[in-house]
Length: 544
Image (cartoon, rainbow, N blue to C red; front, side):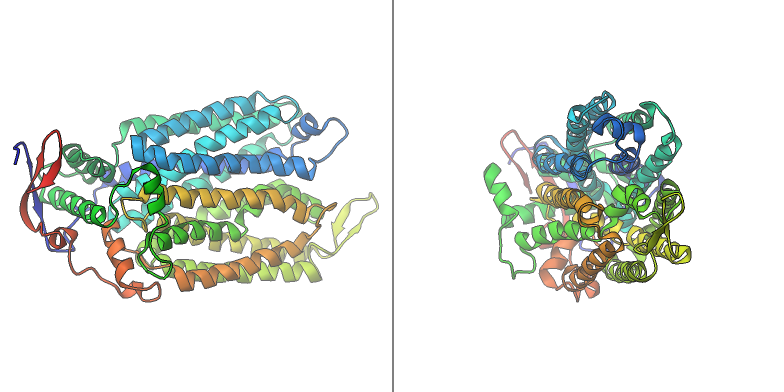
């Protein structure tokens, strides 16, 4: 057996497979969450821009006060369409070139899209093509940043750190709302170009920061670069490379990789995609079940209807005639979103993923049903014309109650389904299919984001479905589906390493998963407990 090996120390103690969390390690992992600002700002700024008179005139011509349903639908949804394809492509690229380079590439693609949007002056060409290209960049970032954060974060705070991604999404939405509010009364192209151009800063900040952060150690192990993986873990955990904690965590990652390779052998490009759908539907730990869980969880997050509020609340509230300042109301919704999300930093690690999803869906269901019921009886749907011909709500107090319950609904979403769906998809896939599994799940989010962005104007516009408050019955019913889904299908992954999650899903069901505790390490299962040497040569790498 060739020489040149690196000694590794394994452990049978399931509680000693990772180093204690240090502030430096926490901050390094947390910075990656900044990518959420891409998603949030790009999703949020369009809500105000589509209500800008200057922007409307640049698309529809003079004398028109609102975008047509088809144009509104196209401009809003085209970003999500680009992001869907970007997320799918990113899964392959992250497998070939690494997590970090793909995120950085996404930043530059995003900035190209921003430049095209900023150049818009009339018609649909530049604004649509720019949002499509920016969407590809957001797809790269949104798919791989979750994967990257899940792979570098310590297990004890992984849920809180990945929740930070959702928090940054809310920060992006808030910043977008503030910028829209500040520019809404401008009578020049600055009313839409300023919100567009500010996006450039997010790409520069994230790309620069990622140049300074290391590659994922789990990706490096998968590619056989164990020496580099050791030094990356040393940086991430704030421990010397020779630390027992670094050795045991690295050995556990290697052992899990060997275990997964035995179950899911490398089978080429198409074979690796096929592996995402291998196994039986009724087998608890099959890759097919995990892929369905990841993609459907992101679908359910979109079914909650939250993006109806953040994409269309300004034109929708303005159309009801019941809100005097719809821009300000949208900002209030966004502030609630921001201040509620940090609650998940604690609940993810002390309550658990599964209870958070179940109770969050129940809270959203009741809020949506109440908003729909008030609107049908005395709220948004009941209006009259004043002497000036303006539409006025019959009962202002009822409308205020609806706005209050929409805000409470946002509280439930922001503290539960918003972060928890992202946390879960980063945890459930084995390393052999993790990049493609997370990419498929993220693509599902953007596919349903696109569908909802396309159909919503046709549901609520006065010359189309004109559902008004009745649209909340739709979202309420779907939130009820989310509750049933979380109760029956979502397992509890709190406090487990990514390697232990796979064991848990093989040995339990979603409803009993919270009681599961690991009893052995992968190193002991693979016969590696004790001191071992990882041996390198040009042809192969093996454990002695």
